[in-house]
Image 1: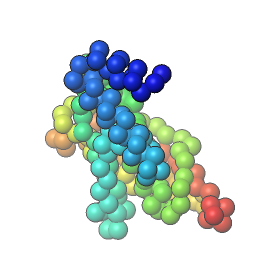
Image 2 (image 1 turned 45 degrees about the horizontal axis):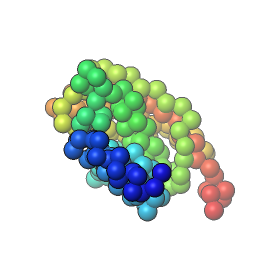
Image 3 (image 1 turned 90 degrees about the horizontal axis):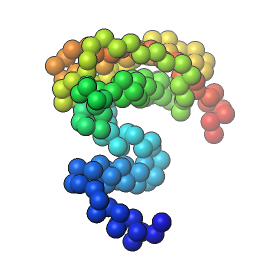
Length: 162
C-alpha cells in the first residue's frame, strides 16, 4: 500500500483512533532511533532510579488510559505483567551491568488496578553468575498494592557480551 493510499484510509478514523495510531508511529520511530523497545515509548513509561544506589530499587511508571484498560475499565492483566517484567528486567540489568532476558516470571493480581497511573517498584533478591532473581510490587496512584511478581533473568557472562 502506498503512502497516499494509507492517508486516504485514515479518513475513516475518528480523532481518538488517529491519535492512537500517531502515538504508535511515534513510538516505533523512537524505538528505532534509540534501539529500545517499542512498548516503552507506546505506553509512555517513566523510569526513576533515585532509590537505586541507597535501596537497590528502581521504579517504572505508566499512565492508565483506554489503551491499557480492559473492557471492565481496569488495567489489563497483560499490562501489569509487562510493567512488572520491565521493572524487574531493568533492576536485573542495572545489577548485572549487562543485558539480560526473562527466563521465568510470575505475577499475582491482588486488586483491580484503576486510577491515573501504575507504579512498579522492583528490587533484586538474589544473584548468581548468570541468573538474577527480582521481585516487584505494583501500586495504583492511591498507593494500593494491585499486583506483585517475581522473575528470573539470564545474563550472558561479561566476556561473551563483547
